Amino acid sequence: MLLYQLPDDILYLVLYYLDCKSLSRLSQVCKKIHTFVNRDAVWRSIARECINTGMTRQGTDMYPQIPLKDRVRVSQNWRRGHHRKEVLLKWKTNLLPWIQLDRDVLYLSQAADIGAYHLRVEGGRIRRPAAVYSGHREDVCRFVLTDTHLISAGGDGKIIAHHRWGRQWVEFSGHGQEVNCVDSQGGVIVSGSRDRTARVWTLSSEQLGGCLYTIPMLDRVWSVAISPSQSSFVTGTACCENPTPLRIWDTERGQLVTCLGGQFRHGAGVLDVAYESPALLLSCGHDTYIRYWDLRTSTRSCVMQWEEPHDCALYCIQSDGNHMIASGSSYYGVVRLWDKRHTRCLQSFQLSPSTSSPVYCLRFNTSHLYTALATALFALDFRGHVTKVRR
Image 1 (spheres, helix red, strand yellow):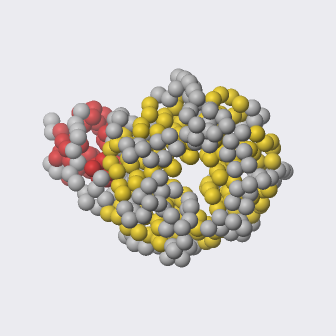
Image 2 (cartoon, rainbow, N blue to C red; image 1 turned 30 degrees about the horizontal axis):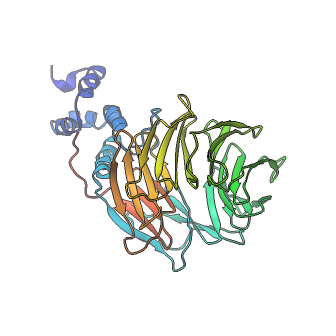
Image 3 (cartoon, helix red, strand yellow; image 1 turned 30 degrees about the vertical axis):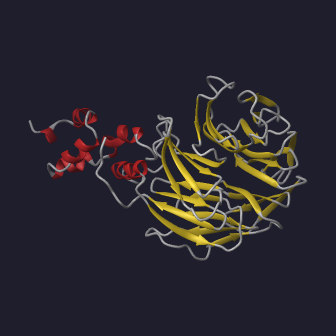
């Protein structure tokens, strides 16, 4: 019996024991084998072990429309640092921009406005935004996307919820100083401010614009994130008056659930936090460490940590939900890629060697990494320079 005449379940079992290189060679045997080897089911176990293929730790596929074989191939470029750098947009005034990515639309804050830009498949500079979201009297500090709203926090102490598909918007007032951070899920908004408070708001039609409660924080609140379970949220503060900057709160009642870690050193503020799952959480900040917390095991200490090798503050992080973390440093536009299975940095990219701008925000998909610096928006394209797939 020929190989391609085997039942599918037996053939899947045989191919399970082959590595990337062997599968690629096997696909050249004949058209029938080539068609079978290109199936996502053949590459699924390999993709889970690669970085940034869209396969999460829980087994969810974030990009089912892209063949897994192609994503595994591009993953090798991420690991080896093979990319093409582009400057998508420049501006003259130093800003603190923030970005969000929704499929082929990139949202970028510039001063008091947020523009929605359609990204080109072939790459190249972006021009005029397809939509502009305004309303703040001072610069936008952060913003977040939901399925229905774009919610922005500004230096004017306001939070504005824009309807993404219309011109309606609602203003939330209550913070006395600039709102540094915001997150939203399930019709709830959490914000943190320089006025040393965190506030929880509702998007429900019955209480639209209403503040549910205010939490005194003692320190400036730099970062917030709502758990995927929506039952709790985490705050990251400046760590000046309170030595426990990372704290988890009950969303419904606003009560403290737990503090993460022991006492941090003075000034080791947490600048960004991100959930991977209800139990897994990443944090970074002024103390130059990325910390990985597993709430199922312990809240006293993180399960893993990685130190920025040049002793720079870390402004932002993002995870692929599996093995890879990307971090943005405070000097010279340096982005680093980390593999959680290793202690050292996997790759680093210096986007702006001539200026000392931090990487204020970064976002990525399986093929591109987008970064916002003080005067420019960069894109690293990992689709090109395709290398042979290896183990």
